[in-house]
Length: 209
Ligand SMILES: [Fe+2]
Image (cartoon, rainbow, N blue to C red; front, side, top):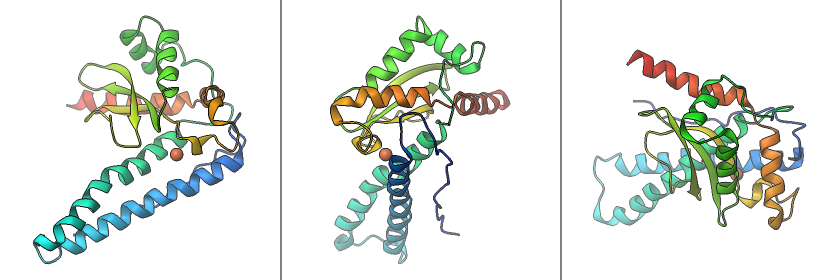
C-alpha cells in the first residue's frame, strides 16, 4: 500500500478581469491549506488504524478527523475546479453547438434562464459555492448551492462550473455587499473550453460503458 499524498496544483491566472492578482495569490495560499489538511487528516486517520483497530478512547478523535475529511477534501477539490474554469480573456456565452450549451438547452427554457439561475444561486446569503452539475444518468444540468464545501453536493453528479462565493474570493476587490460585481467578474473570465472538456470527458466515459 502507498499513502496518497496530494500536491497543490499550479494555476496561471494572472491578469483576470475584475479579480486581482493579489486576491488570487491569497486564494492559492488558502487552497494549499486544504491540500495540506487533507494529507494531514489522512495521515492521522491511518495512524489510528495502524494497529488494526479503533479503540474506544480513540473514537472521539477518529470521529472528528473523519468528519473533517468532507470539509477539507471538498475544499481542495472545489478550488481546483474553480481555478481551472477561469482564464484570461475568457467569458462570453457558451459556444452554440457545444455539448455544454446543448445540455443547458435540454435542461432550461433558454441559456439566459440557466445563467440567471446559476448567478442567483451565487447570490444566496451564506458561505459556499454555486455549482452547475451534470447528471450523468440523464445528461441534464442543474445548479446547486453548496454550503461551506461539503453540504449539498450530489453524489455521482459531475461538476461542470464551480464558482467560489466565500467572501475571501473577492473581499480584497469588492465590499461584501458587492458580491454581484464579483459574480459578473467571474462570468467574464469563464473558461468555456475547460467546461466543455469536463462534459466531453464524461460523455466519452459514458460511451464506453
Ligand atoms: Fe475559496
